[in-house]
Structures are given as structure tokens and as C-alpha cells.
Image 1 (cartoon, rainbow, N blue to C red):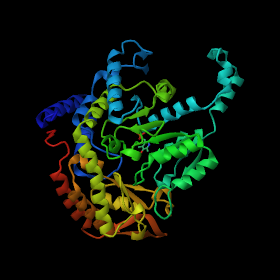
Image 2: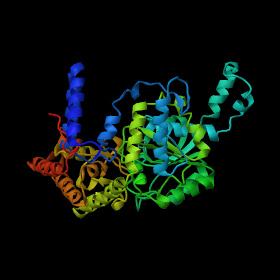
Image 3: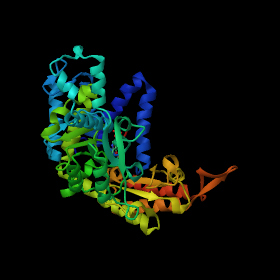
Length: 479
Ligand SMILES: *Cc1c(COP(=O)(O)O)cnc(C)c1O
């Protein structure tokens, strides 16, 4: 164990004392957050618990350095240690995922996606204006030149999974700049099976002729065949961009192999580091050599100066993910999702696609007469943290929704196994079956609900037993 409980307790007590000497409210909120995390049954599919070495790595003076540019080629002096940090993080990411090139500067998943979009645009979009202007310097550009440049990079086409099938805002939807940069056409899932309909996707792609096909999701409970995705992309001359933000841990942990491993098939892969991958909050991009140079222009094209302390923590988390224990963890995440899904369906709950084969599941609460909003609130009353989510062709829209998204990475990190998740399924089913919508003076409400007396408290007590048996950061004591 790299940090003993006694060491960790001493370190964090001292850190909190130091913080408290400047701003006690921040020390108190930091301590309270640990207590809250420990006391809740966290089923948010996008969250996890980073290791103490990963967390500790973020608290240093590496944060103080400006290092715009790339390894060995910085726009600031004195970057040799940041060079080391970035190179080690990239080396681990390349080895972990078997990629030609890793770019570890992105500050978040959205930023990683912007880097990928920029790289694809700069590689793929022919710019006659740029060609014509090659000999000129920036200062020589006329207003008309700038106008032409803007147009040439505008109005490219992208296809991404529809939001209600589980896609992400950054895949060309409004409320995100990708929806303003690109003309977008969504692909959905089959109404019968709930699975990605590759034939329909191919037909749409042939008609729409996108520059980019995005594969990836935040709420789709199944695996994607990336070999098939690449085949379709090749047929229509599109770049295959895989956003593995959610499932990077399952790729790193070798649950997704063969056609389900995006790295050999995608032109570009972008990801977060903090979801199933269990690293610090951040992002990264993997590419073949073809896009490496374009990706390395992420800063300053769409990113500010890299966060040295976070890149250092990414290196630590990637190094951890290369250990055999991570493979065990990732397979447990998937096995736990199976147990959770089976536990829910055997208790009569309905899941989108009937189950899961990744780390998440989507409960359809329409048959219970509830909205996602009511179900989410009722579960929270019982100490179960989930989030409401649209389901395909959702009758309640994107705000109230009809689904509850749940995932297993965080509780798996705490040590939960299949039998624990069967109990979790029972807790969820117990709460949802005891919940009913209540009306307002004006009629039915999509937000108000009531739970049969005593059920929430009973479930909370049973959840506490599970949580106590699987402690978060075991032995870490702040008092
Ligand atoms: C979470 C997520 C993102 C965004 O990650 P942030 O770090 O929150 O910016 C992007 N794409 C997908 C598919 C995601 O699930």
C-alpha cells in the first residue's frame, strides 16, 4: 500500500490545518465532502474515487509553472520539470492504451473533444485561402482573407449518437459549441432492441456525408463495435472520432478488447481521466501519428496553459492503471453492473435494452408512473445518489425525463462485489416501488412525490451497513 492509513491521516490533518489557518470555511467544506462521500451510496455512472497518491500529487507547486507549447518546445523558459511530467504521463498513456501518441494537456473531457475537433478540421479541411496565403504573414491578411478563412472552416458535418439514446452534448448538439460549429445529424438506437442500428447509421452517413463520425456515449448501457464504426467511416470518407470519456477504464482494464477496443480503429480518441479510469479530473487525446502534430497544437488553439500538477496526477493514475489490480477492478466493474441489472430486472424493474454489458444501466421508470425527476429525488431521500436521464423517445423531455442512470465504478472502487450490488438493486427497487407521484392544486406534478412512511429511513439504514462494510479511504481519520 503506497500510503498507510496512519500516514494519510497525518498528512490530511496537517493539510486541513494549513487551509483552516487561511480560510476555515474551505477546510470545513473539504472535510465535510469526505464525510458526505463516505455516507452516500454513489451510483453516479460518471464518478469515482481517485487514489490517495493521485489526489496528493495534485497539491504541489507544479501548479505554479506556465508551460504553453509541447514537450521540449515551450513558449516559456524553465520548463524542464514540466517536460518530464508531461513526457511520463504521455508515456504511460501510450503504453496503457497501445496508442502511437498521447496528448495529456486537456483540462477536461470537453476540452479534449475540442482538441480533437480542431485537429480533424485542420487536417481534413482544404483551405484554398491558406494555400494562397502561405507566403504571407498574419499581418498581411486582409479582412476579406479572414472572412474566407472563417467560412472554409465552418459548416462541416458531424454525426453523433442522439442525446436521448445516450450521446453527449459535445457531439454536435446545441448548448455546446460543437452544435454551432458543425451541421449535425444524430444517429439513434433501434426502437425494438434499443441497440445502435449500424445499418441505419450507414444509410444516414451515405446520405449526409459527414466529415466526422463520433462514437461514444454517456448513457448507453451497451458496447460499441468500433471495427464496424470504422468500416462505415471509411465507406463515406469520414474521420472516426471516439469519445471514450465514460468507458476509458474498461478499455484500460481490458474489458473492451478486439472490436470493442476503440484505439486500433479510431483516427482520434478523446477521454476524461476521472470517470471509470479513476484518475484526477482532466482529459487526454490519443492518436495515430497522422494526427499527432495537429493534436499537439491543442494549446494554444483551444486550451490555456497546461496544468502541471494535474498532468503529474494523470501520470500517477495511468501508472496505477497499468498494474494487474486495475484489470481486476475493471472486470469487477462490469461484473457488478451485470449483478445490478439482474437484481433490478428480477425485481420487476425495466431497463433500457433489457440490461447492460458495460458499467452503467438506465432504469425506465414510466411503468412505475414516475418521472425521472421524482425517482431521482426519492432515491436521494433514501441516501442513494443517482441522476435522472432521458430515455430513447422520452415522453417527459430532457428536464423531467423518464430514466434513472446508474453505474458501478465508484462503489466498485470501495470494494463492492456482486452480492453487494444485488442488495443495492433491492434497495433501489424498494424505494421506487414505494414512491408515487402526488398532485398539486393544478393537477399532476412531474416533480412532487411521496414515499410510503418509513421506507426511506429503512433503506438508508441498510445502505449504511453496506457502506460501513466497504469503507472509502479505509483508516483515513481526519480527527
Ligand atoms: C463526461 C463526458 C464528457 C465531458 O467531460 P468533462 O470532463 O466534464 O468536460 C465528454 N464526453 C462524454 C462522452 C462524457 O461522458
